[in-house]
Amino acid sequence: MHRLHILLLAASLLAGPVAAQQSAASNNLWLMWEQIPATDPLCIGAEECAPKRRLRSHFMMNVPTPDAASLFERLEPSARYFGSANLEHEALPICLDGPDEPGVIPDYTTMEYAEKIDTLRGLTGVFADLRGARGPATFKGNFGGEAHTFLVEAMAQAGIPMVAKDDLDQVPGRPTLSLRYSPEVYGCRPWSVSLSLKQDMALTRDLTLMLSGTTWSAFAGQSEADADFSPRDAMQTVITAFIDAWQKANRIEPPAATDEAQVTPAAADGG
Image 1: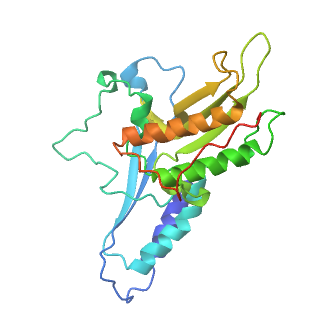
Image 2: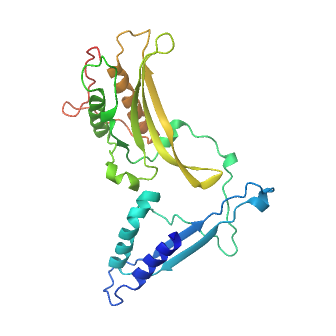
């Protein structure tokens, strides 16, 4: 059924108005279908049991711009539901093996593990909505709302773009920040506030498997050395830590603070 759906869309495109006026742009469309059979659990032997993927495609050249746009619009709901839609690429994201050039699979076992700050390099923006974050019951005010306002103002001052929720699917990795307050468990653990960045990643042993995981995080919490350190202080500390790490990873000097744009932590009032 999935294959038939793609073929019908392609047929609809090719059956479009042949006499449509060509735009100045040259449009090529490539629809790729990859099918990976399930592995037989009773099979023995690495080579014999490795699933043989099947690749089929439709390649169309010099397609009129209105028809190309129409096809993309029809595919977008399914693309958003099953994966990502309307991603922009500077180069062709799919590499085909040449007739005399066998495909080369990177040896991930020789790669070094990245530090968490490295995952911020090249990050062009993040999505965050901290308004629903819950703080301690004794917090005076709206913990999540105050955290979100502090984040938005601090990000704007640092020059880090905030991505709208509707545009998140167009950002590679779908980077998303979340804030969490963990209450104190008497005699077991102190209270703490954590800020985490999640991004989409591929599993190295099977690059067809995508998952979302935490690539960067920071924690701050109750301290015996500073009895006045509050959840508000901790919230502002972890947000500032993210901005500092992003600037360091991207080698960006912090902007000079001005009276109009300076972000100053709110005074702790027991929150």
